[in-house]
Length: 290
Image (cartoon, rainbow, N blue to C red):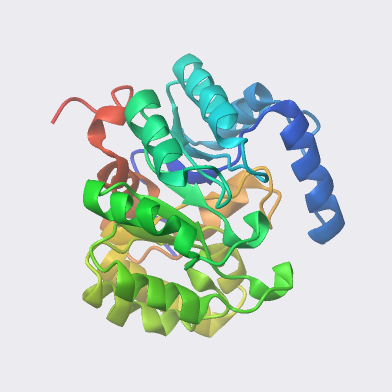
């Protein structure tokens, strides 16, 4: 089988964090992820180097607060790390119990130049439809900020499925540029996505972990191939590094490429969709001005 090699690779789902938070995340993964082998050095600089050695030219960095009041400090760290490492594209986050989540997001997006917002309802402990986030969601839709939301793997988190919750979210915010991280897998049949992509033009899919796990199930793997054949321009490749279900970054990237049915799909999945989501101006080291 021919493997289509893309010109670039932007890993759209990475967790580079302060060393105390990274150490905590590694301990969490060791408890909960079977076979997880943490990196010997989980400092952000070492992890960034490992990404580069595996072939990633840039990455979306996702670092979210676990408690109210942490968001501003995390955003300050994110901005500083990205200034020193331009290949890191920082995403903001908020906690549902922050004093003013919308204002916190504005400060990060407008003041610090974050590329979008990431929320993790399971880990952060809130319902996606929590009314305290109404003003934030309205602002995200109005400003057309990308919003990445963890979905899927409900059983792993010992939580109820987020399928109905996320589908209601789409109905409430049909013009939002929303990214269901992990594609609600395996809680939603992958064959449901074409209809949703047609219905919601701002919807973009993140295949992180999904592509690795679906590759072991022929019907799911074929569903991903079919999606990539038609909707690759609205699909992102991510690894979840260093907390991935597969410890090998090269194997994650290779598995994704093996499912790409044509060269266009490989280019879209590996970098074009990411560039379209956050803007060409964030990648001057890769791309000439438009």
